[in-house]
Length: 322
Image 1: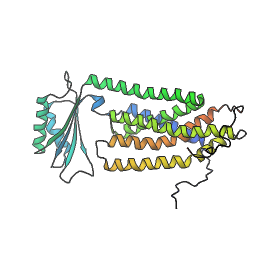
Image 2: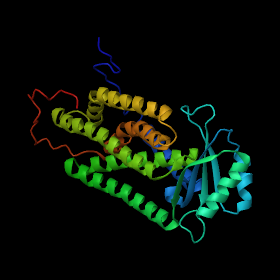
Image 3: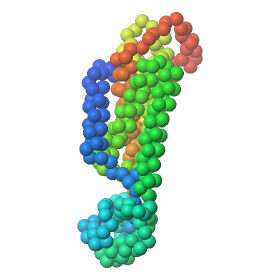
Image 4: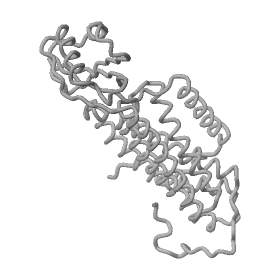
């Protein structure tokens, strides 16, 4: 027996509430932008500049006590957070201490670092600094600029590629879906205040690649069906195309999410932000491939050139899902 997550033949109307689903996506994008501007992002050391110290102690982390101990040092903005992980031992208590960049310094000086350790040792005897990372303000600013350029360049390249391979309506739909995925990912990071760093940028670029792959698979089937079903309504042909690739979409997204869920639970706090971004991106990317990209194409319309012959007609591979 074979496991079937989706029936072999489906005829679901994915565009019955097209205006509602596209409208909901627009509202979600606007709310994400508002959250981004109002709340801001919890920038990691890569983008904020300063020093991040990872501590480990046998005594439970008391964030208030840590903060009180460091206050007399006059180091400016200090953010202390406890790190939780199911893989930690019972006597393993980890905290992240983020110290803002000091004026005129690329990172925390050796004297200040020693003073921090002495202060924390007073409230958590035997505390150890397992890692210390420093990024200067100038470098962090350049990293933000480079990250924005990387994301914008990837969207522009995809816009050009889809335009050449299909038509401009498909290109607009694909980029609209990718913009939707990127903004919603940034929005959820802003609302939940998950650390946003270079690993998150890598995750966003991964999301863009995953989402466009899913979109192109359905676009390919749509282009074939537009030639095959020359007299059917565009919305009906779109529904046929989505239903024909539905099994592939569910299996690909489902297996990817299972692997990501395992990493999210057992992978440790170091990669948790990166994995969460991809996990969230797979969900919104799968949604946007159908309910954003295809809706945009549906509203813009497609030129149906019937003078082109059906190259897949009579082909033994014509009816095989991508």
